[in-house]
Image (cartoon, rainbow, N blue to C red):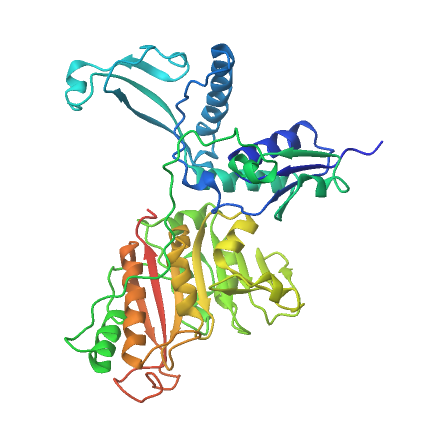
Length: 465
């Protein structure tokens, strides 16, 4: 008898956790997770993730305690494992304070968490509007990395993750033998469950639609002032880097045709991840035959993914940890209705690719995308994907505004400058600039300001220590 086919509908914390339990308990069952949205667009992505239970009427306290005890033990084991950082699970200590003493001064979960005790009078003085409280250590689950960690484990178990909106559970009956509904508050629309309500409704996620433009460089808009400010900015290092490229590691980066520079100072994480063979490089390109930088990074121990829509087919360069993907990175995902008619079109946002690949971080992002870099960079900033990147190495083109960048010349340069200042606000610091004198000396289609049409800029994320 064939193993039953199972579908889990919903890709939040409950959906992915349920799917993982099923895949481990019944490994022979074909299993799929179906969801309209995956991380980072789920309710769980904006959840606090603090492991502190509430009391739910209608459920016996001993049952609630058993649930919490098992959950705590499960997450505590992860927090003590080598996967704790990737999964986003860690211990956290603090106080829970009340304006009036609670009905149960010692909650049912007090002997499950660590170090539970009443707050001292001195501690309560820090909260003058509160009369009661207790201190303890519990676990915090940072939901975005935890969701990605769950997805990674599901893929390793052979589970299919499918982006699909399910309008009616009945539509799945012909393909699956078992359907598990984990849609959360979405169950109101899917199955008409009006009794399922969020316990707290204050979680909001504000979507950022545009970057904040910097003030004009002069009292009245002027291309000259904007250009001089921009060129000075990209020509001035913001942080020193004593060790660049890979020659000291035995790689052959010195033979590359372009000045792709990474910072290997001990104070930043890249050199340590190279040594431990745990680093990851994404390379975005368009028909560029120069791959020596990627090869040198792969030889040094990095997992390298090169995205180029012009290659004939996806493949792996044997023995070099170098993957070629026939895929183009853009600032937006394609309209499904349009993409369906373009059989050879394969364009996605970087955040979408990271989600589908199950990659939480990129140690180095290299991009040579022929004037598409400005809108791609804007997307990385607006969707906070930039925070998942350790170092940026971008070739920027300034002989024209760039794909889908509009406005007059002074407005365009102000936009470029504002993008780079956004990087600085994200704690990225420019450590290397290369002015390509082999390219036409053009600035917005004019021979002006002694500018090249092409610069290679390298930043390091100073948060990645």
